[in-house]
Length: 205
Length: 167
Image (cartoon, rainbow over all chains, first blue to last red; front, side, top):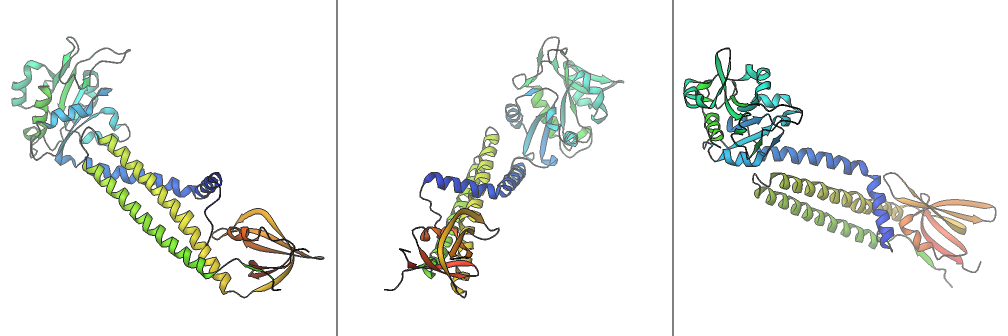
């Protein structure tokens, strides 16, 4: 049958390269399909639906996601499979994904842009965290201060770099709860209060 | 004295080709299973810290493993299959005879979806004929000199009889 074995390795290599280039589209298509398919499978394995996870979006440029997740997952209730932490840049290609967050850590100057999505704080939260400082708009408290620019102290500073860009001024950061979250309990009548538990863990970091 | 006949095709080679294809098929099945097992094992080792590393490793295994399989399927098994089909056609076809001084071309021509050929020119006085030779068999004819009788099926040389090496 065909003598595919060539005499010289160089000729063999040339033949192989020619064969590959003659079907290059197959190799390119396979690479594209693989990246999409493996990415999809990985998302299935490493992610879950919003009902089974608590997602924290942090409006900073530098976030040590894994460390923060590890810390927050220590306190998660059993019925929550995972806690996810993302910088806002994660939502660059899918602005809608940010709507499914449960907790948001946002700098003061950006709050008004998102305020309509946040839930007002309950009496319990107010009494527990008033001394930290609150974000109040039109007499309603929405956020709990997590970083004070004046003293440069805040929560989870080992994982979140609250420092501003060189041309910007340092700002306070606040923690907010999504009005549509599945996990904010009494804040919006949702089934569980996992986001409140995770928020409490975050505030103690 | 009987002239020497060089047969370019025989049934044994077809059987060898089929056996080779079966072996390659088994080999790529085992290879694919190993790739899959490696991916599953890596996924079992998944944790928060190594998520990106494992994703990269699994992607590399799937992409490169797929490329190897594509190469074997298209270039090895595919080529073997094309050769087998062609050889069967040659062995089953009706032979015609062509006589002349043989000159084998150097350029290989790939026929889309089929084999690669080289052109053979037979010159007999004023008369010139052009036939095709399976490029993978052309080596069998490289030492042939002088006047020859080529047996052809559908324009493809299948055997060569040396009429007079000193001519």
